Image 1 (cartoon, rainbow over the protein chains, first blue to last red):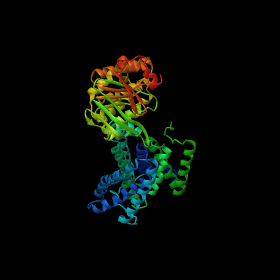
Image 2: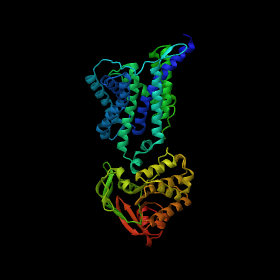
Image 3: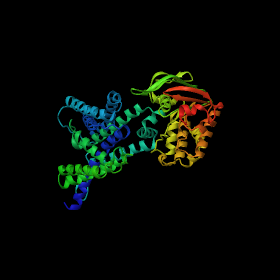
Length: 293
Length: 231
């Protein structure tokens, strides 16, 4: 294959990574931005989404597409409910203290991981893609499903943006993010907002996981990579900045795709980590973050 | 209207209010004065439920509000203009007003009324509130609280750092609200501002009301200003 088509392939692979990463990282950025909680268990919500997708597609009879669509709707709701429960039972009781919540979410990480190991087992299981369409380009054929993943992620991201920018729910979330005490003084039930945001963040990770599981297989340890990459994205983008997270997800995802295809996935991770270190040294507030006053 | 009785409150082990009692009637402007640390702002926060009361009671029209979750207090009709304005800085003027309206589900009529009181805000609805001038920010902070159509308005040093024309506007606003029967609790450090609007003045010292006087007989030379405020 010539260099041009090869680069195109690499960029397309990178876009798939970016799309899934953007969803996952947006969830992490939302939770940190609004609640100031560093959610170490975020990757486990991703894993939970993938594992739940396997159960749902296995239980629901009929064509793969039916089970997959059911999973795409049910899994984020289920994972969101688990997250809201964790928020109410654990984080709320800690008063959302930044240090205590880190330790608590580390604990949550192990609880969810071991629960998945017990109930789902140590195997990696595939989920069938809802359709098998091969898009034939002049130089190579490409999975139509992967293109659909990119499109679906773009739709969900646009939906979240609309929710935040154009609805009352979004307004309440932004007001709570800016000043939670004043939000309370204007009748906003901050605890309910926090439970909702935590559920939304986890739900976004679950959507990403359902989308990726036909490509990657569901496994109880699969949450670690997305967690690490999401943290990188959130740091590079600027803590709490959603736009920054999107740009950073695109940057890291594309470079990961290109470097993985041309060299090796390990080198891609090494360079991404180096990039994060450089950002921390030269622009500690992140690409789009505002410097703390 | 608003009744604070034997209120104790503080931050952790630090007690700030130690048995503070005061009441504000409908259509009354009650000024609260005192030195830094006397407990004026803590009183405001305790009324809003933002600082938990450890003793005593706060009632609004006979309904007990101390002990309620903080977000339920404003819904009963208490508007709060905090010290330092505390706008939602990254939100636009229109969005700050929207938050105020949502508190008690008030609609376009209230919005119109508030924007008529502060026409300058109407010109800047799309502007990010952080970029407003100090005076405009204070207008917005008051407008946001008025969006509740409050029965009780808490104003914590609203004239701090403002130019005389703004201070006059705030005074007019307070007097107009008084005429509509709103009970206003005003924390204020400037004697001029107090004498021009207050019906009664409560001097706070060590977390208690040390003296409560009708404003009518008071002048700049009243000894209480020197004794309790140091001016």
